[in-house]
Length: 264
Image 1 (spheres, rainbow, N blue to C red):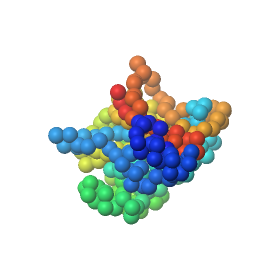
Image 2 (image 1 turned 180 degrees about the vertical axis):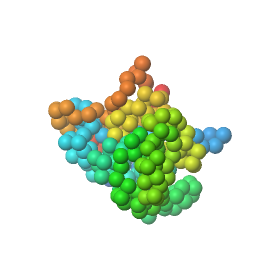
Image 3 (image 1 turned 135 degrees about the horizontal axis):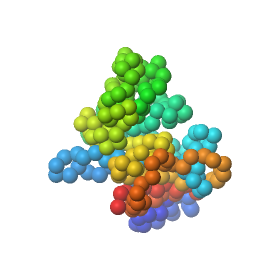
Image 4 (image 1 turned 90 degrees about the horizontal axis):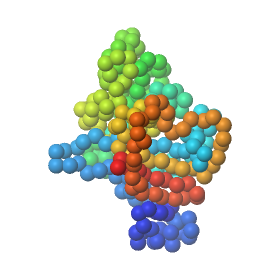
């Protein structure tokens, strides 16, 4: 892996050490490259980063799943981003499509998470208005830390009860049936989850963007084209004016670009 931006002496060393492709970065190096901002004088504030992958022609999925356009380095970064987070925010449709399972504890990050005051693994926070979820899945019945379900105040009481019976913690983050993204971020921060990561899907990411709560986007650009009518990385409501983000870093391996953009 090579660092393309920002350019430093380390950039040249990593490229030279393993030839044109560079060497494989350690998990500790990746964790340092993707560290969350340090808390300010008033203490930790919520920081929401997205992690998505897209082909050159803008497809976020192939045949409904992101795995075919990913790569081993992308999955290493995926794992590191999870290991750094307090909670992973994900849409209900993505849970269904991708077969989400509970986040696992990783021995390589155990000491760092303990030092940061984090649990052994991030909580999965599922955003769902209808609560049309299979609560018999391991994501709900046997997570290392309880799965959170973010929903609206008008959610079906029977489905709320089913979620609770399965072991999930239901968090109300909206006045109606749906979830207010800004309220969801505040609710998670109120539970101590300030280092937030969303893995989509596109509809949820679009809602977070439209609500102005996305602080950072980690976007993998896959050197592939798929054509077809696959979704972009973000859908849903259109913002009034395009929101500007600033390039923070860019890594490269095997033609894949691993970019990190922060809110300007």
